[in-house]
Image (cartoon, rainbow, N blue to C red; front, side, top):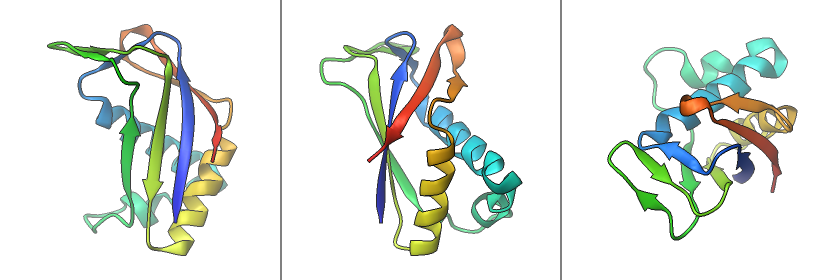
Length: 116
């Protein structure tokens, strides 16, 4: 199962360690969905994660020493899992996050536009 989450940044830049931001967003979505009922299923203990994710940043972006200057404010997060239950939980968690502005470093925010 694959879910694509589209987002818009306030400013066209990301810190070089943008993966940590996406993990923070995943944890926020899981902790808010169903009052955190499924959070431990994904992040409790040291078990292997049931999903993987990839971030698509715009072409023509420039990688600097500490940050990435993007050519556009639109980015996407694609989450993949073979576990249908995990996929449904993650999909529902992100559907609840539509319109949420996730705070980022450097005074930036990431607003969740929708899922595809």
